[in-house]
Image (cartoon, rainbow, N blue to C red; front, side, top):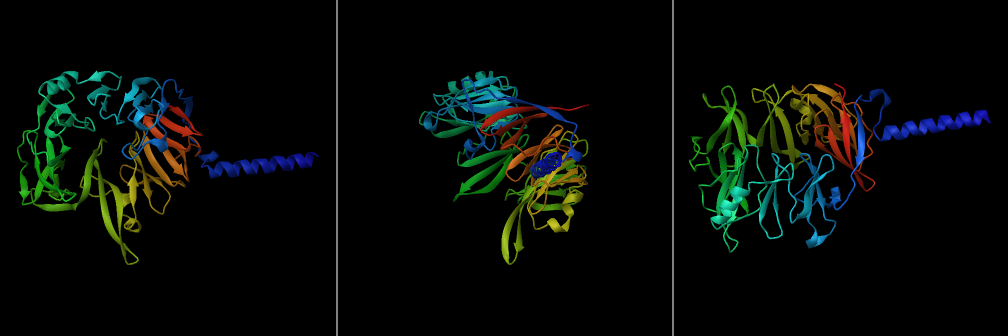
Length: 413
């Protein structure tokens, strides 16, 4: 009998290890970071589930806020927000869902009017909104405040026709945008620099760059503009096509060709940028477009990891940086890798994807399930969640078996 019991215990132990391995857990590679799980009690609201988000909103949780609804569906569904502690800060009574950007969210009320809230659920920019309405305009929905601390607002007349634009800044002051041609679309690409698009046959073709006073940004050739300084004598430049490159504009030498859809600075002590581009490659006689994200060094060149020739025909995505500036890199056909700011490999993982880092914690995906890792690639949890998104610094929003939770990670200093 004892022998049978011993064999049974061994079988159960082996089975348990197999299950843990399949969900991504490794005893020898566990992280010292622990966490507490708090169920979100849906009292007077319903958390918007991952599969209910729709096309525009790609994440229920974003910038410390979680989108909730009034629990109704269709035309009667309304939206609000809870914060990273699970506290309801904006009642679910607004007709649209939007992201919090730079601490503010832009919402449309039942009367079709714009209301703006800060991260504490308090109304903001009421004076500016009232002044614009007193000028005889209604304000259309805007994505929100951008990184330069401003929003471009579309103003409509009583007939609902777009007739003007305004620039609202986070200090609460506003001014009319100098370009009144509403057939031209506007996007801000750098503080005080706007790109103008003429809508033509369903495609955007870049018209020009202007500053907030309407003055055209100087060209450095017939169709090339200098946008902002990158480092030393290197500048970010853009063509009328809307594609960005890097050049030493003093000697006219192109360092990186015009291929980037966007170039964003990484706020690290080392001078680094993200570069995003789409590349057409030929595979087995067929042309295929692949999306790539790279980290560029102070000289405008991709850091070490991205120059590996075996990846040149593959799609590459790079996660947001961790507190110590480590990144998850996902290459189609390979397991995810963690690299440092210089492109050196920290750890080759067995995961399918690393979706993001925030603070000391990252999210990985194995099959259809999500788990958590630290910046060294050690396991904080197995892959056991149906959905996971970093919510705030060392806080996460998760879904599991139809319920929603906030995870608070405890990091030993």
